[in-house]
Each structure stands twice: as structure tokens, then as C-alpha cells.
Amino acid sequence: MKRRLIPVLPPESLLSMATKQLLGRLHSLQRCEEAAAFSHLSREEITASEGILFKDSAEWQRAYADLKAVLATREHIPTAAERATARQDRAKRKSNKTVQRTGASRSAQRSIRTSGTAGSRR
Image (cartoon, rainbow, N blue to C red; front, side, top):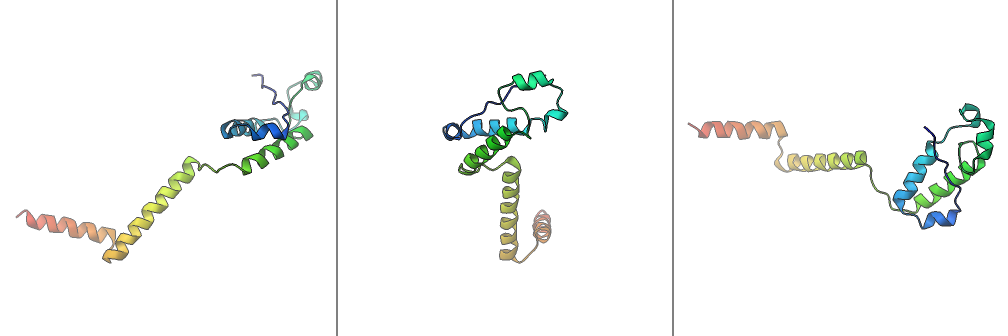
């Protein structure tokens, strides 16, 4: 599979890009190969390219730093894992408030409810 070259962009052009585009560029930069020594490309193909191919290049490091600086100014959107953790924390806090208010544990509340309904059936 031939990887597309990542174009070198001036930092000013990053400011006008949407956050989703910036994250796509970040993903592309992260997928670059480490160095030319580990690449399957020939020297001729590497020298003929006009874009970012390797992480050890000065262009990659400058593009990555510029991109991270622009992303740092954007609003943080929580990942699915972060949202799940926040939901679980809210549920725990709500559960703890119920226990503190009633003074009984959840299992004790369940047993009280089930024994109360069993007695009313007779």
C-alpha cells in the first residue's frame, strides 16, 4: 500500500482548518515511519518526494509542534472512555448519596423491599 505524502503547511493555514481535519492530520503524522533507514522506499523515491515521510525529519517535528500548538487552543472533546468514566462516577456519587440519606446499604434496601412484598402477598 502506497502511503500518501503529508504536505508541509504553514502554521497560519492550520488556524483555519476544522478540528476534525487537524485530528486527521495528527493521525497521519503519527503513522509516519520512524526513519529512512527502516523504510522500504529507495533513496531515489525518498529524494523525489515533496512531503513529510519520516518522523526523524525536521519538517515532521516542526509540523507536529505547530499542529499540537493549534490543537491546544481548541476545545477538548472527551473520548468515549472518558465519557464512560464520567458516567460511572456520577452513578457512584448518586448511589452514595442514597445510602447516606437512608442509612442502609443497597443490598439491605433490596432485602427490605423483597421481604416487605413477600409478606403482603399472603
